[in-house]
Image (tube, rainbow, N blue to C red; front, side, top):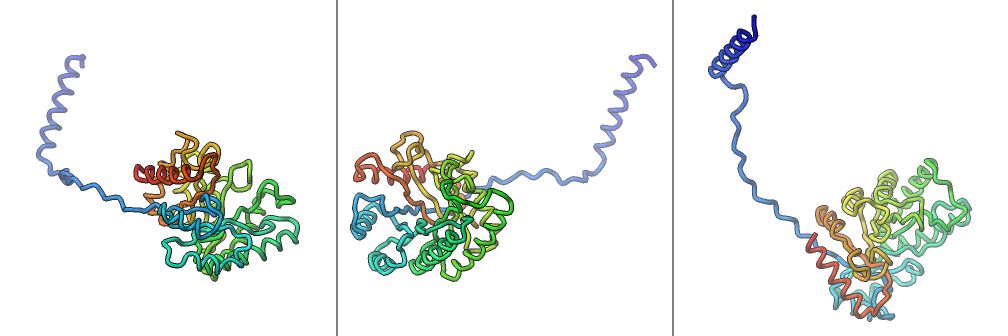
Length: 308
């Protein structure tokens, strides 16, 4: 067969197949035209702002709370040191106010990964005292760091230490549940605490602790360790994310004091998508007049929350 004959026979074969195929019933359903679906309405999620005790320009508790109410702040994050002796004071100050206790910021002595039994015993007793007081105040939880870089002697960074931490957290978490609150693990940047630096790490430890009383948080200042604010919050998800800390992203001052660096929209988008209903709490200083920088920071966060 020469080239001309080959092409003629090939074209004839193709034509025969095409003709035959038109008479065969189709096994597949005819393509249905997709109906245009209306865009899903985004769930309305409120930004619940909280202040630590040192954020306002005032010293006396009721003055602080009055100032917070004027700005529409709905959460109050006290320090844990001496909290048991302040329960009634705080309860009385919050009566008839639209402000509740958010998280409790540490305040215990010792640390959970201490090699010295006496230091570990200090942690156990003081932390449980704060957890009990947090429960009385209706707090979302007590923030803790397993070990700062400066805290020594500390158990080595090994798998065995991680297992030990999860066991200890299980006991502490179960105690927190009985008190009606939680323990909140806070990852820090490597300059402050190398042991636990990412939100996902904290969430995994909370998961492996196997207690509903162990949660985690994210801090926009420390989250410089993360590759994505959005991914960081979703790595904890709705099951483990219990609290958020807020500061400027260059110098840890009021949001907005570091200019364009202070962009929280990516993280806020994750919080809105997951329906985060707990608190975003200020933990920062200020280089300017707080009567100016604090309201400006609140306004900035609310504007970025709307954009997220």
